[in-house]
Image 1: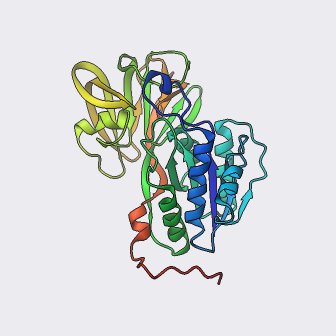
Image 2 (image 1 turned 30 degrees about the horizontal axis):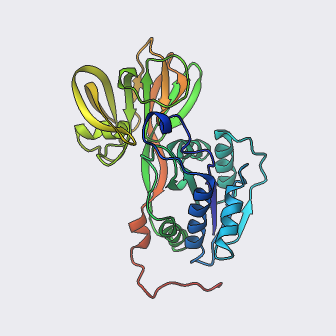
Image 3 (image 1 turned 45 degrees about the horizontal axis):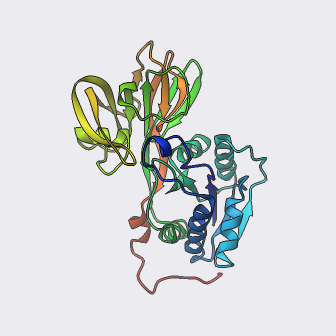
Length: 317
């Protein structure tokens, strides 16, 4: 069973480490994280891994740290540029190779790039970014073992999610958590952290335990599966939310509306940029946001369901 792996060596290093109390995860810590993932994957002997050979040598360090306790690891024959395009091209290549799952190690931006390259990717997103509103934060060894069980035993552990497509005069993009219009007309440092900048947004998550716009959305109740929420910022009412690591803010919200799959929202004319999953990316001119199906994401508990303490099959057959 082929499992893909994309580890982002530059995640957790955006400007939010300066404007909030966001952590910085260095290469050695990420390599240790990936090594633990590999050890978990190796508990099912049918697993083989094909990875993006990142410029920092992150995965190669992890293989060395695992010291023979991980599965066989091969590398994609791709020319690496050190940009998000690497993740998109790797995901597309792994889909063509028939991979049964793709593990990403990074933040929400890494997940977004993977889903742009492989729209219905069976995804195992391990959180190693600034905001990890989408990613898993459990122990990587546990995640590795759950992934191995899910792909080798044919379980229904990959569950559907909702995403949003954004179309403007400058192109097309996907967001797995939120697409937010901000007043600024420049990309700058990318990240958003000032409530006064917010104009409107469409968010696919509504959890008090999340960080960012998903935390704002939670003030208006849960979202039904297959739905997103349109938020209009401003006005006299504010909701308190965890807007970033170590950053609790009152966010003014004028109104909200829940949207089903296929619903479309025309963006406010004259606004500045569209931020995708927390980072400014596209000018919002003539923008349209559409609610669509997102990647399939592993449910760890479902992956372990029905697996007894003595039921592991670690044979090569």
